[in-house]
Image 1: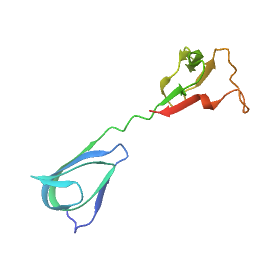
Image 2: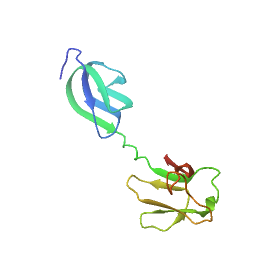
Image 3: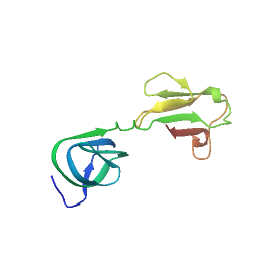
Image 4: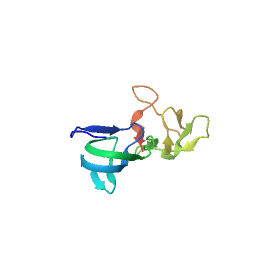
Length: 139
């Protein structure tokens, strides 16, 4: 394979490249992150694409190392600091058992039911649910 310093690109949608190894007779190789080896070249980094300009021949192998994608973010439901009767709040995820707050490890689409079992009224001018009591955070 040969090129007159043209820029080419490796890209992936499977995760990020962490290493690309080319085995072959490298005559010239350009681009950020590339190191010439014998025989060949190695790119190291953390990106879903990298560009290179090259002039090499007799390529026998190209090996791509791709990091596993990060796990999707989870959610945590908890009470804000200072909520009265904090021990009287429970949460039920789906058809599971009621449990005390906070509850972590929730995913998009999880049905969450929050219940108050105390003596105070949980009401404001917008209706029965007062969002000022709860925090929903991403983990």
